[in-house]
Image 1 (cartoon, rainbow, N blue to C red):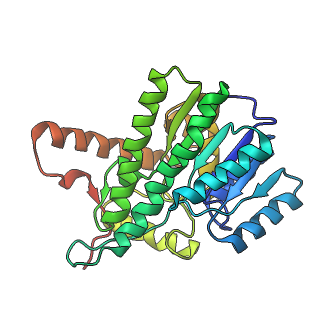
Image 2 (cartoon, helix red, strand yellow; image 1 turned 90 degrees about the horizontal axis):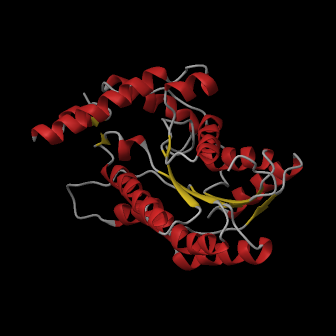
Length: 291
């Protein structure tokens, strides 16, 4: 799908002022899409829609809690009844969360998985069957993380587990859409460490970067706009993995993420070797070392 003019796009988790969702919604609207933004924070959503509309972009806002299937179904009903179709569904909403393994508290686990995993499952169930029935080309994208596909951020097990599940979910969707000969393409978005409000204040992501580097990880801090470009690139190319290689990095980012790409390639190979050799997962565990 190269020409996006006149397409209808939905982006969840797009109300925040510093997020990947907002940046992607803005970029898609600049390419000619009519974009429906959605977020559980209605005040933030209204503010973001107002900001983008003031730029002359075609946007609308529909609040939704992605952890609730009925709420996402209502979002889909509203969009389809208003515009008649959906061409792009970017299921992006997500939250952070550690999740302790050594106590009996489980609420944090449910909260993270309800948003990060079930939020995307709810989006697939609410949008994709209707998009397939349209009989027109389309795209459904879900946001994962390097912590869910490349290695494991073992100090935040709830977050990492939810993002790993997103990869498997989208891989299953890809296979089922392929077997149906559907015109809808599935994609997994793998953002690098990005200056968003995932840790609360976007400025804190710089400290997260420092902590990861101290723990041996290579972490190049991206801006939300960088990830938005990656999403657009995946839509236009049809690639399942919305993730830059060296060619795309040079072309789109002047090679700024070269070290990050090399490190992640190394981790992926280490993970494969560990599985083949039946060795421990030390080579692909990454996080902030303490002490």
